[in-house]
Length: 153
Image 1 (cartoon, rainbow, N blue to C red):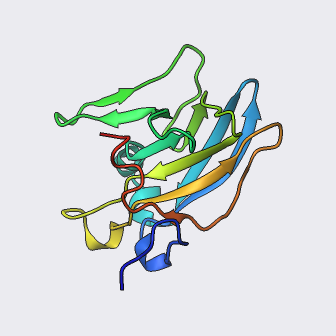
Image 2 (cartoon, rainbow, N blue to C red):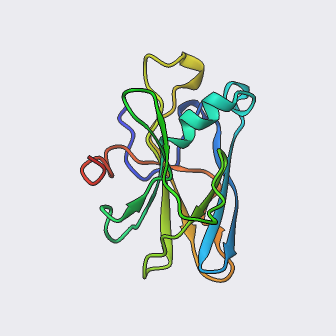
């Protein structure tokens, strides 16, 4: 049976166990911390970096308006997009994106073959409500399917 976009992700489809552990306001920005319950990610720095390179912060009103702090090119080199004073590390992002809706999606592109079967994870997203006391709307992510594909080409 096909999975419908935006329905809650089943644990079998989030094998890296991606979660958003905290969201905090910091000046005009937001600090977002994520984690993985899979030891192949949480215990291996290189794998954390790989996961982080698959995370995007997206404006729900205009998907083309997005932010991706870590990227890994086809040559394997890591690029970090930041400004002076940014506090970006493998599991923490300082996000300067604040859509007028005061909502942001945290999109994870997913893990497919040839990655080990124990890491395969469907494309998924979390909804973050911004403002003075930001929070993750739901602890369980939702299936992204192909929702963001066109905007992130």
